[in-house]
Each structure stands twice: as C-alpha cells, then as structure tokens.
Image (cartoon, rainbow, N blue to C red; front, side, top):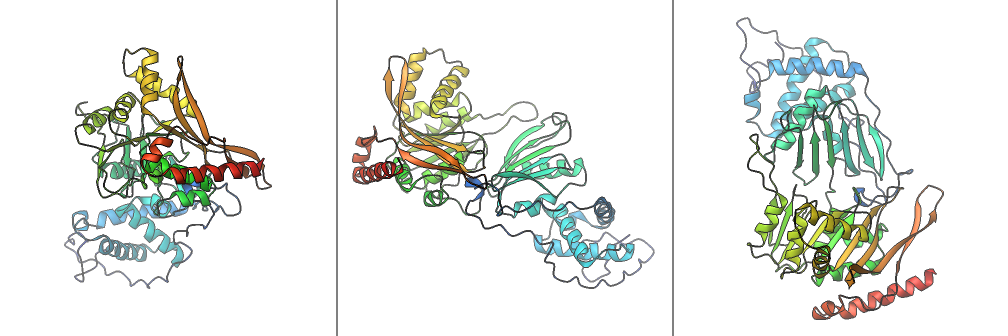
Length: 495
C-alpha cells in the first residue's frame, strides 16, 4: 500500500495492514511551476461573447500530451484510490484536501520510482487533484476567461472557441467513464441526472455557464459535453459599443427601449449573443420593479434587488414531476410581476408570454432563435400553432402586434464577431400582414487583410419611432430625439 504517511496527519490514509509499512523516501519539494500554470487570458479587443476574429491575438491550442503521460497518470491514480480514504476526504476543506492528495501522490511517485521532471510531476499533481476534487481536465479551460465555448466530443477530443474561432484543445480524459462521471458531478449540483435511462440533460455551472450533456447510447462515440461559458465580468452596452457590436447612438436607443418598458424580443442564431444582450438591456430596469425570470437553465444575472428566478424541472425516472416553461410563465402571472423575462422561448410558452405582455406587464422580454426580425414573427406564429391553439391566423398576428414593440436582431458573422444587425419596431397590420419598420441596420462593407469583416451601423432615417409617446411618458423623448438626430448625421456622413 502506498501513501501511508505515518502518524503525522494520517487523515486520508486507510488503516495500515498488520505488517508495518515501509516509510517512503522523502520527496524534494517541487519548484514553483510556471509553464504548467493555466494560461492567462489573452488580452484582446473582443470578449468571448462579442469576439473579433481569431488572428495574431488568438492563442494557439495547447500541445497534446503523449500517451505515456496518461499511462503513468492512470497507474498513480489507481494507487491513490487504493490508498486514500474518500470518506475522510469529503470532510476536509478544498485547499486542505488538495494538499493531502498532493502529499500522498508524491509518496506514490517516490516509492514507485516514476521517472519524471519537476514540471511533469507538478502537471500530474494538478491533474490528479482536479480529477478528485474538481472537473478533471476541464479545470484549466474553465479558469480561462478568453474561452467562450468548451465542446467535448468523447474522451479523446476537446474543442474550444477562442476569439470567435474553434480550435482543438490539448486535453483529454482518461476514458469515457471519467468523462461521464464528471458530467454526472456537474448536473447533480442542480438536482439533475444523466445516465442511460436519461441520456440528455441541461444544467449549469455555479457561475451560470450553460451545460448540455448527451450520453450513450444516443451519443455513439462517447459522452458529448458542451459548455457555454460566461465571462466573470458581465458585459455592458458601453462595452458592446467599444467592441463594435452597436454604434453609440444605437446603444442609447436600446437603453431607452429598456428604460421605457417596451416589450422586447431578442432574436438571433445559436451563439449570436442573445443572452448577453438580454443581460445588458436588463441593467436599465428601475430598481423598484419586481422582475421574475423563467429559464430552462438559470443563466440571467440581473443586478436589481427584487428579482425572482424560476427554473424548469425535467421529469423524474418514472416520467413524472416535469415542470415546463409554460407552467412557469403561467405561474408568474399569479406572483405580481412588473416584468416577466423568459430566457429562451422555444415552444407554446410564447403564447403565455405574449398574453403577459398584453395584459399589464409592459417591459417584458424574451429571446427566440431566428435569423431575421421577419422570421422571428413567423416563428412565434408557428410556436403558437404547435401548442394546439385553434386560433385564426389573423387573430394570432393581432396578438403579436398588440404585444411585441421591438425586435432586436443579433448575429454571429463568419469572422466570429457578433453584431446587432437590426433594431426593428412592430408597428401594426395591413390586411393580414404584420408591418415592421427598421430603426437601425448593420451593413457589411467589405473585408480587411486579416479576414475581418468591415461594416457600419446606420439609421434608416426614422425620426419619430412608434414608441415615441411611451418615451415621452418617461421623459426620455429629448434624449431619444438627440440619439436619432446624431444617428441620421452619422448615416449621411457614411453615404
């Protein structure tokens, strides 16, 4: 048996056998590690959610370790599990447990006479501590703030998104079972499970990062784990202006839209920054308003003092107890909300959200997957039809027109950058057609030598939006007029 450390601490070692163990040879204290430390975030002009294209500023993928490293790690890990007392480990604080594991692993390395450098030993110590106490090979990726997405395709292949581009990361898991164990550790923290009987699961990390797991037998080549990471420092509209996602005048108009309680739908494709933009808009909600959020996985991080966060629940192993998004939105109406915010509208709950917007809960917001404002309106109609509502098409369109004030379209361009491409008002109906008018548009003008798309935000020349009276009610009409005038001037200069 290895790692029996006598009577000095002995908190993690299992009881000694009848024969006295051989005292391990002392191991020299390893030198401070630099090369193996988690890479520092790369300073760039664009964060993960509003990233510029990968160029010289994008970090290269980490170099994969040789197979011999993983073979040695497996042998040491097996010896550690045979030696350590996991019940005692669970009672220790994280830092103390990490130090105990490091001491035992050092003993095992010394007795087994594994040949490795100090740097390799430090790498292995960090990896094993992460395996036992954290999320294993994911730990060095999770601490990097320049990574937007982590995509694990089985135990041997992991990709990350940095600077809007997807590259392969030099990490892998010991085997598929270790990957599945880490996924189960993640989802169990929010009271969910993933296994053969329930192979699909949505969850979140403690910092709000979105997690999706799909396990065998649905995932043929091993468990697939996808993590949409959130930045530690939440983005604001002024930062989006700095990154070129929107012009200063457009940002002012978005701020006024959030302030004057317009009903807003944020539309966009996967990874376009819808949730980031929704977080930005909610910063302009007054602090005396009661806000209720409904999400599949709680991601929104509102700063107001009076926020109630609700989350859906999947069915249990007997197929019972499911709480859907529609159940949450219905229940919101009984909780005296002033604003209802739905993290992502995917189905019939859109009808309940529209009803809430149209019955005294002005300023409600939600996000929808769609490629343009017009497609967003069509998707809302389709989702209402999916819910089995036998309403005439014109009636459904009238409900949409009476509920939605503004559609904000976000897009992820082919160079990896995110842009707000439309700020569009829903103004009414002509016959059976919903009429919209664009306030702001984004035009792509060309491409630079590094492959980065060049473009500009421009006003369409509308001087009096449909929400003008609402802005006047909140004493924001002068600021709105100045922003529109400045946008028109900039648009004329750009022509």
